[in-house]
Image 1 (cartoon, rainbow, N blue to C red):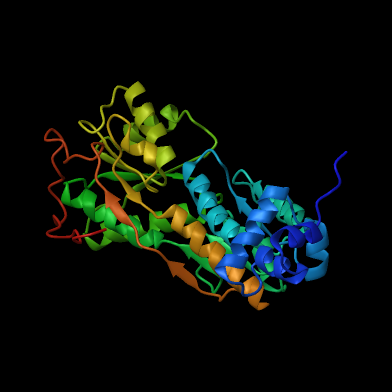
Image 2: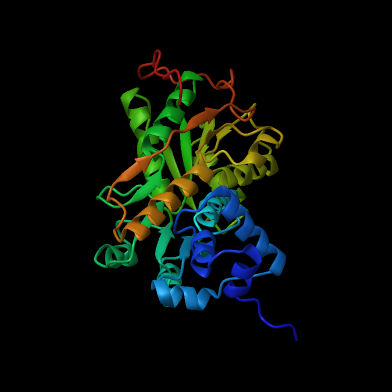
Length: 356
């Protein structure tokens, strides 16, 4: 068996001191470009790897971040993880990943597991940031953490978009297209505080226009067949001409369910999603949606968390709101002519902001 390559071997090959090798490979001190290249070339040629356990014992850090997301079946979370990973890798950190399946109990177990792995900090998307016992406990402890997607009303470190404002802008889009009888199809509010905030913004837009309040249909995220629930909604509220869904994956499932019920999209019912996943632009019809900068969310959250870790602090207890935009799609069309707006109520005029 070949002898294990040590840092002394790298120093000898690079013709420099062990301390210089350590500074270069740890990124903890200055070195000229020529010396840095020699060290990196020597380490690569020799196949040298730091002993991560020994390094963590010396620094009292694992150089590992824990990340908790609800699921990987929704591409938005995979996109966020890509952003986190790119930043973490550039800063010399690794990731430990856990999924909670939109279940608060599984969230608790996952956080405990990540803490048991001695992570230096946590990035979390939880069901409800304000009701989360784990978030409350972390707020009282020294371990740095930051929320992604969650938009807490209380001061907590978070990176997200303004969910209510984005949903209100969707409402104005639908109103301009003549859709006054609409519904919001959402994942259970208990599973997603983002879903609830979007409903609040959607209702606010319709209230401001003097239009009927949107109907609400809550469904399970894990379910893929929504035909029965949609059939009941459309039977009870026969005038509905548009559905706003709390995320794109749900919107795509809803479009499939509508087709199976004999409803055409958008000729009979328009559908709008939220998130801006790439596949939504490739479907037929393409999905109208709110596009959010998921990789940037992950990157900005990881950058803030690592900065706090290395400063021996906690991230600032404030929410960073990133921009969003409306992505037009074929799933949104004007209200069908055979379903004219109700005679009662005030028709909104110029209720759409120029950009979403």
